[in-house]
Image 1 (cartoon, rainbow, N blue to C red):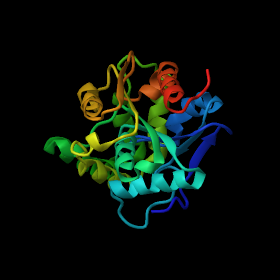
Image 2 (cartoon, rainbow, N blue to C red):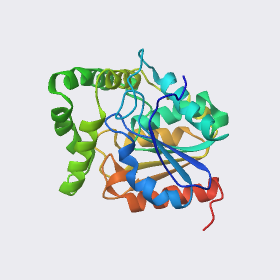
Image 3 (tube, rainbow, N blue to C red):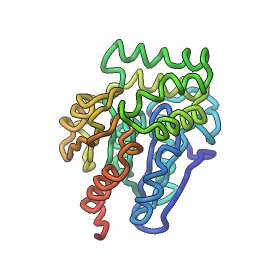
Image 4 (cartoon, rainbow, N blue to C red):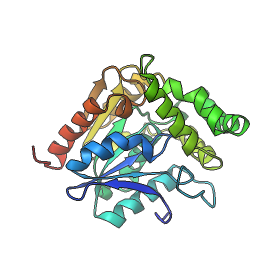
Amino acid sequence: MSAAGIHVEEAGDHGPLLLCLHGIGSSSAAFAPQLAELSAYVRVVAWDAPGYAKSPDPEAPLGLDDYADAAAALIRERGTSAHVLGVSWGGVIALRLATRHPELVASLIVADSSPGSGTDEAKAAGMRARAADLAELGPRAFAEARGPRLVSPDAPDDLVRRVVDTMAASVRLPGYAYAAESMASADLRAELPSIAAPTLVLCGEQDRVTGIEASQAIAGAIHKTAYVIVKDAGHLANQEQPGHFDAWVLSHLRITASIPE
């Protein structure tokens, strides 16, 4: 799959490439803190996945391999490899990217993610049901129903509003349905041990969506890994605690990409 038409937000003009892949209910807007802060050290590129926000609708259904191939095409357009930061669904794409195109992945940062919803029949069924919910409710009501769970119970009201507004402006059919099916079909447990890229796994202490156990399953299966709990954060740790989150990412990049102090 090519990168043609995929909308990206970019910041930074030097250093290695950091490709940011958002969650299933979001867009490049979710990475505003990283575009602002990490771009002093690296070139930050955050995509709107195919069928999301400003990216056009796919011409045919996409599977997890297709999303990974689209991310690979973005990397090839900009250099030889990238450090890949994936949040939730974006983390699942990043993990598949690392096994499908290992030569393109210098390192991984996987945040509030899982080995896929296909690890559990009930989770897979719930994921597949989301497309019908979106069709029935419409983007705004869908976002208002789902958005508040993505942050911790004590998250400030303005963050909740931003999360809801981002989701409402980002999700639509058929793209969301393709994304949900790619998650429902994914069970990456068997391939995780083959990932050679050094990996940082982060999870919000109060993640009520994928949860700490799912992140631990990723961290425990990959050989070169570090695992971090982000305090006072829910499922969107990169948005709720960006200072702490970015500090850990920068520490990881200083080790894996020799970013200067």
